[in-house]
Image (tube, rainbow, N blue to C red; front, side, top):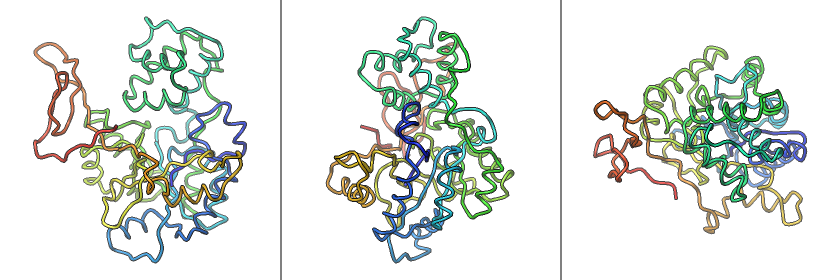
Length: 369
């Protein structure tokens, strides 16, 4: 199970934050109770990997609780519940944000886009980075919600593009403190160490919350290794587990993890994990408040049980989005010109505007629908 933010006032927070990141403390507690009642063993990530690899035999199906991003809400509202109930969990940290006042690009963009809507502001596209139209167009035309357009956009554009759009939008909106979200603060190292002393685990999640399949090899290696080293230095633990930002991974990213002492990588592919499966493509169910709301708008134990048992997947009512992606890197120079074509690492034949780089024998990459 994957979570992001556990909050005390879901309805209030819903007015200013990305909805799919939120779950109330009470619903979170009930999820843990439902998992236990359904017969799951609430286990650590290490125990789960040992069972998958055949090093341990489990008498029950395992349920592992994970958190991405290191939001301070997890420390405030999830940590006490986990500690009280004796449930293990792992939190994946983008270490460049820990002990800072910085906010994630997805939270900053969501906040800015809501400001654009509230002010009925019409952006000057000529002074925005070209990809901004792909983000703003569907929102301002009413084709997509802010959350949906943002989710699609972040998965297709590197961190550099996101920060360029943030800077340009802030300038067009006139600047000011109200353009930076108050919510979405992250833990500091003292809070991380306090949780670690109580037995809770931590994994790496890059330095800057970077979608690695959109970055060149040197960036991939730096984001993975420096985030691992930062946690080990600050907390005094060995980091062996990793979460892919946006849930996206490639053979190249897995190679870097495997070569540098990691034992697992978690995706956001909503499918069960099986004994003998690949520990670097662990599947997770990303949960938020509304996944447990019944037809009358209140909490539904039956619906939560169906989510935990993957009933909708078994019945073919859900379509998990694959996390394995082609690995795009910076385009090479052609003569004295920088090629505008994206470069795909992998075996798939090139289309008219793609350059293929990599061995013919590479594993076939599954495309998203």
